Image (cartoon, rainbow, N blue to C red; front, side, top):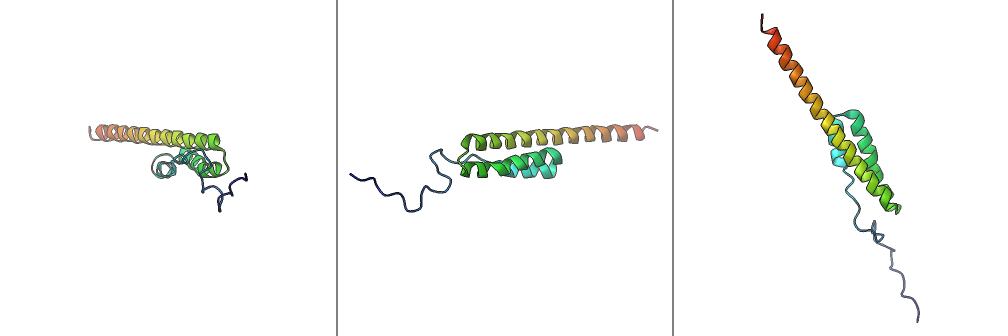
Length: 102
């Protein structure tokens, strides 16, 4: 009995028996970079850009960690951006209310 022939093109692209690739969260990383916090957003973009490469290399745990890291950095960037916007609004409200009192 002989072994069956291999598939004509090997395994399908990105499907090495580990399921679908994780979401790389690149859109969130880019949006938080543009609208919230540039330094943290850049870290999120770097992490997000690593996900697909690691997945294609068969480093599934590293790809999942990179995806989680991209999400974490995006959330931190968004939180910092919202906090900064609130503090700026409070500052301007305070400045406007004290300048109109005299």
